[in-house]
Length: 140
Image (cartoon, rainbow, N blue to C red; front, side, top):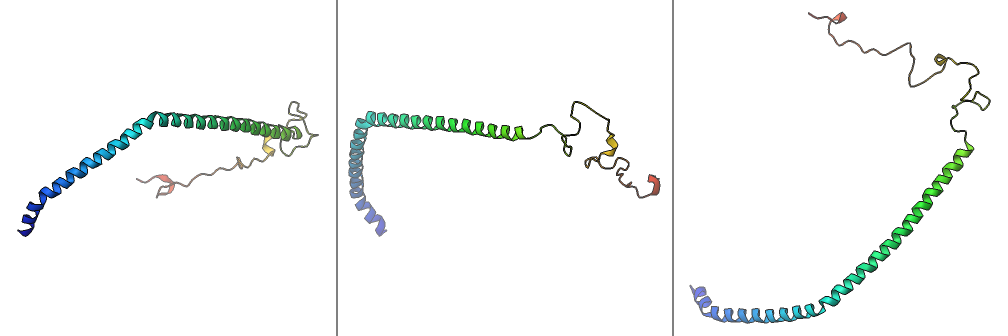
């Protein structure tokens, strides 16, 4: 009960201080806002100049990067050409330069005598076991 009586007598004093504080804050904020509106055109012009400088710097670096990329591609292409001119491209592995050229055939070779590890032995083939419980696959 005592707190309620104290709050009743102090409420007008607290309300008056709150209103004066709010008015002072609005005046202070209004003055700061007025300052900012005066500087707004200058700030926007400065921002635009900074953006233009950044864009120009980006375009210069992009052009330099494109030139470097083109040079690297050309360097790789020259390297591949140099490797290819020393090699006999299109010849069979294991053959000697004295062997037949790809366009002419001196004697026909049999394909069966060559070993191809990917095809394996052509005479044998894997057949999986039947999955039936009965012999010869028939139950019932």
